[in-house]
Length: 419
Image (cartoon, helix red, strand yellow):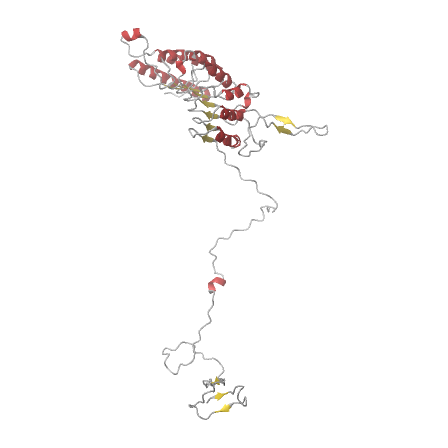
């Protein structure tokens, strides 16, 4: 059965009943028709309770199982998300014990300690004076103790920057204000190396210590044209020599030996260092200058605690070694000597060559005699070569150094080992 509702163009808004269910009147063009179909509802069960069997029927086409399945509502979040597990898989930090005092919130942690760079090698790095200026503040305040800066292109200007590292730092009083002076000392800006490019502060920090460098190496730097004079001038005129903490100077392969005035100033400056122990002058044509032995005789005994002397590859011959052996007993604390790569076995005398001699062992003979008086000498590096006599003298020098070691052990510990 169907009903139709008349539009506003018809004579009434009442519902009209049609007797024929199949034949429907076609609406007029100007007529709007709404059709309402009534579907019979299914039979409701007698009991108001929902059926207990909510399972899906095995055969969905069977007419007996016409009820809809009871499907639980979908949850967008799984139950394991909002339900805490029985065991906690994460580590839980225990609260601080009551015995320990609680840290106040206002307390600030101390700043982390800076890492110190004790050794800095810059050999053959094409460093100019402008680049060297950037490293001065880092070397001064970075704790550098070993600095190898040889074989670079900085000239006298760069050497003056290095000399500023050894300049003494003196506190100066502030100018008086209203006729009263302040007791707080102000560092001398002129005596502290500053950098215009790196933005370093004018005043050094409170932890700054003058003369931090203990080992400085100019290996491979050409110092034949007085490039080292600014540094020597600072060392010679230093007001507080006890602040000069240098204990090793490396002048290897620096083309030294022609100017004896340089060596005179060098030993004059080095004798002011109270802790100088190592002096390397290897691979320089030292003994090409006839006055080198005289310079060594005047300079070496003046060094207070020189322990190691390296004269390898300096052109030393047998006669030079004889003169050096006479100087060694006056160097009270000498412990190691290196004279490798020197022609100490060659014969220069024509008469000796005519007599059939093949080697000159006068230098080794003098050195072996000197080891008897140099009780601190425990290491001697000699060049290889020579004949049977040279090998015998090298062995005797080795035994003498070994006995010196034994004597030092007995004197220091009071125990003499039986070898």
